[in-house]
Length: 482
Image 1 (cartoon, one colour):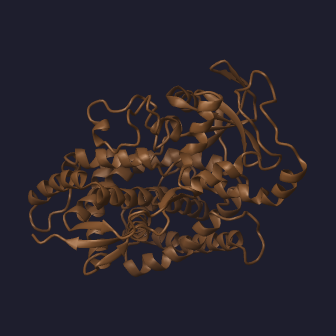
Image 2 (cartoon, one colour):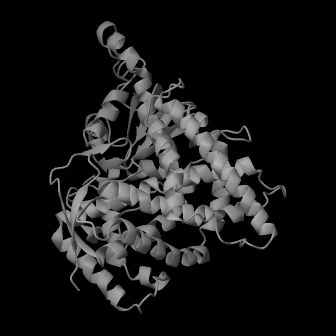
Image 3 (spheres, one colour):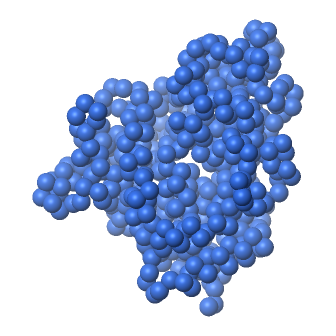
């Protein structure tokens, strides 16, 4: 979910573009002034700061360039800048990640723009930050080990149905939209027990409008993508309230199980004061889960398909591992926990994909106190940003960082706090293990059916805010003969 909320920041900077012409021609850029104890750096132009440079590197498919250039020029530990209208300190390296993750709610707290509350309003009149804290108390119970064991068969079943309906008998497909379809279908099934393909497809339409609006200029005028996203959000919540009302009725009549999904869990679980959530409050939270529960995994799946097409020797090793598992299964037998534990090389491949193309590029925090870090002064109220690119492509932590090498994750794996695709500390993505299972279930069903090749060998990668192939990664499929 963090990535979905943070993604609002990416296009928020465009709001300041109207000021850019004035800034370019009438105002000189600021240098590294602003306090001798602050980390070195520059704050760029008034209003826009360095936001355009920050975003444009991602649009060109080089999101790491902004971070790496400034680490080399100013400091490998931290540098100051100005992003999205706020003075910002970028924390770099594994020690920087550790410091931020270890001081959550002590020295720093999560920060999102106020505009996020327009698309994801809270019926309880609390901030998105407060709502996420509540959600994090609920999710561990839903994502505990015994529950995850139960989801594996469902994931395998949904994956099989997805391939049968959308991949079989196709010579060519576009990977990214199909991977989104799979992860959204799965989220609907596990969160609210909606699994009919037609109902899922209908339900996904306003989510597409919502996603487009999140990545747009936050101007709430009739006809703008942002305005359409707000309307889509309201429409989705209205639909969710209908589902919630029916579930309450089904639970009362013993037609639904208390443990069948997170919706039942929310309806039947009181808070620490013994109070149950209202219907609209539950709808708010389910909306956030559905948005955040499928975006990042679909991007990772797309890049797995990309790299396996480019690296035949890696494909062959994944294929060998997955076919050994497939041959051990009886006809019609679904994957189980033990099967996924055998997919060690496959998960190492997925981790290497997450290193090179992390869906979560980084996230913002806000200093809630003045404090010192690495000899630098961090003022209260300043924004802080951690970036996966300060370590993921850093040869200090990953030798020959541009090489695709799954063996990096064998044994004890990377150094602590150097591999951070899911964040870290109290705000580490609570769905990390859920994502691992849905990705491996997809890989298993993909590998036992197809080999493939890219139709656009030099397809550009854009980051806005997640990395995605510009044309969605079209591929030609070759069905296995055996």
